[in-house]
Length: 586
Image 1 (cartoon, helix red, strand yellow):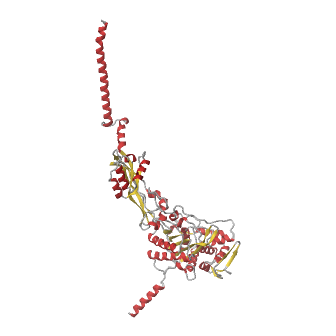
Image 2 (cartoon, helix red, strand yellow; image 1 turned 180 degrees about the vertical axis):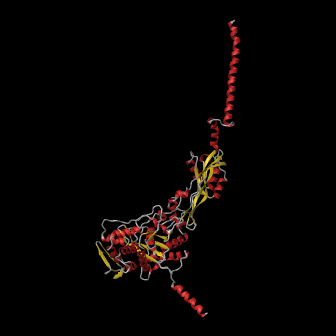
Image 3 (cartoon, one colour; image 1 turned 45 degrees about the vertical axis):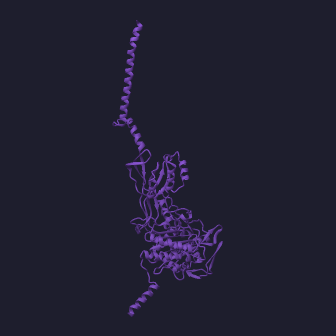
């Protein structure tokens, strides 16, 4: 009887269990449907529901960088010296590109102008990466030809490439940028942060193969770099570069450089260097060609310092331009060395010492001066300290000081040995003399509203004007700088011929030819320094090698700047006479 009851209750228990399991399964299915709907259909109510939505966006939405336009560099008149042009850079996802067929890879290699084996090698090298460059800085047309192949994993992005319209003419001053458009040398390096700007960001939608489907939003606009306007006048720069290059070639020189300053403002109007290089194609360029010698090289100025020593003598009050100096017998013996002139000048005045560039005369004057007063004057004129151009690697020069000056040290110091300058410093010192003793800051960057209020008086005007008169005689018939003369204008300047230092001291057959001066002498507009390094032909004196460059460049500069002549030249006088005679006979 009990067994019968047990058999009757088993079907009921089975049905109850079945109903329970079925209900649980239905509830689980409903819960799963509700959860999926919450993730993909219904509005998100908490952080957990946003997971799949975020994951979906992460696989399709990307943030890309928007390249910033690098600011242009211009001369004082607005002529472009450096400008960035848009280019396309091709890159690839190696994991996707490896899926392309061998024929497709061959077509890609042909479009990139590379060997298929080289492309295959690079794909193997980056097989575990998701990025590699295919070609940097292609023209949009060339990049388009590659993209039309529609290969998996090949993409492009916009970049900028720097172009220098003036090429080698102003290369050392501007410097250049690398492939990422960042400054590496010169003013490109010095003002890189200002020129570079700030990249932007934008969101884009891409498909599973990485191809852009849609631009969504710009998250941050790219901020272009600021333009940089220089004080350089490219008309004068071309003129200086042409004459400098010719002089270096004609004299078989190792190098040369020239600086032109605007005496009224202190602006650098030209800065030419030889040898030079093409910044648009730097293959095979040497470090020597990239050096801005006018600011980086420091050299002994030689006899171009003698007028400044004469100025120190005038400041004592014991000397006047006509003070006689006895140079007999044409040499002077100092402990350790004898200094001599090419010929015995006899008794000449202080002006004659400068006119003839007398070593004996300037030595006698220097030995009568306090060494520190001479050094202090040089320092006031800007020697021994950087001019503050902001150019990377600018040389401050060396202006020695000693507790006790030996006579030969003082003599050497007085005629330009034992101290070093760069060309801009020497030009600034001559500009002070030209400006009747006013010193103005030197500038490479054009600033609006710059006036003579920035000038500082460092020398009394009458003394500076006396030196100007002395320097004019150097260009005259009896002077060493006759070849720096410019028809129609009074020129003031000084030649220098400096022995170069060799492995065993000063070399007897290696020279540096220098000329420093300004024009017009009465109302100066331009001061300039020319240096020709190591001329190897028969000529090597500053008056023969450097002075003609000054004369030719300044003659052109006066025409370009429309500076009226100060005096009538013999040729003009002859023409006027002929015209007058024609008018009389008619």
